[in-house]
Amino acid sequence: MKDLKQVFTQADFYFEWYDHEPIFTYEGAEAMKAEKGFWGTETKSLYLKDKKKRHYVYLTLPEKQVDFKALKEATGLRLSIEKTDVMEIMTGQEAGAVGPLGYEEETPLIFDKELLGHEKLVFAPGTPCSTIVVKSSDLEKICQVLGITFISV
Image (cartoon, rainbow, N blue to C red; front, side, top):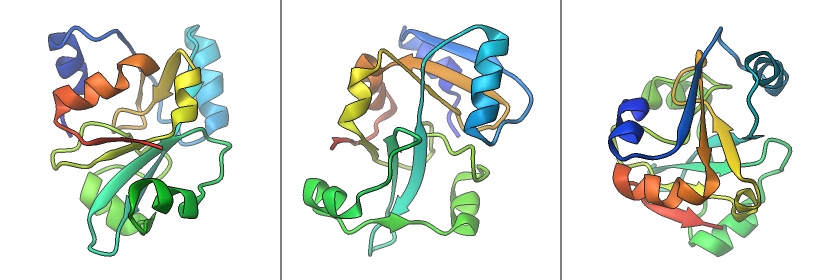
């Protein structure tokens, strides 16, 4: 995983970084936010694959069901959720704490447009022991700096 703290600092992006005990649930994330005194919209990152075994990350709201038909219409790709053991090997991350950014290999980010209605987004930066907060308006620029394809659906 790339060092997102270093990348964001060098690129002068607004971000907040919080270290904490490992978190694997949204309830735990909400409790930690209250304890640390910050706010932002929790997100869900799903590690997806296409028929050619290329990988993507879909960033959306935690309570939202994935509409794979709509994803196919928007991207032209037939996507499915990657198996947990494959995801853990490919990313070095644990299920329940998959981050949307920072992969060593080019892993396109499929971004749910609904997130743009929220000022700050909260996600794990590749470890369940940290949380990062970014401005939703910066996400496309962040992807450009990281060399990631950004697909908005």
